[in-house]
Length: 143
Image (cartoon, rainbow, N blue to C red; front, side):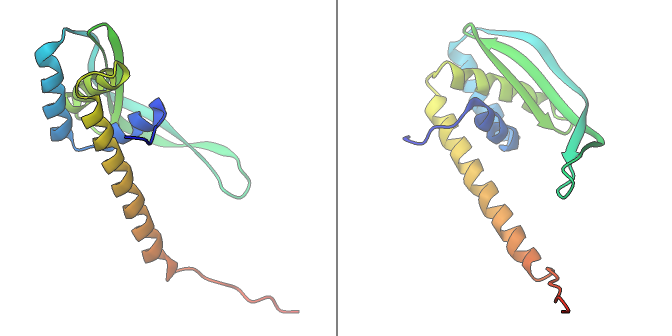
């Protein structure tokens, strides 16, 4: 795969990936490697900060439910945070993150998964903008 992504981009794409796919790949990674759970899966809230688009001021919008986990797979650290209460998927995502970081046997499969998620996300956002275009209001200026 010639396209490269930052760790943050890969983490975002893994967090949007189908949980059952992550669990399947994580289980494959565990078959051949030692796993140390540094911080077990936890469900909690995260404060969501947004930026108001006109004035540019930031404010706290709400607390969001999220699951997180931290592991070491064959000595390589992996971390995950995903929206919602899904500790199993968070643990699987952390294992997959470690597999990507160590460039293990399943790293290419995970990169393809991330690329597919990124493509799907772009297409969904484009479709949503297309749907919203009909609601744009344009004002005329009166001289």
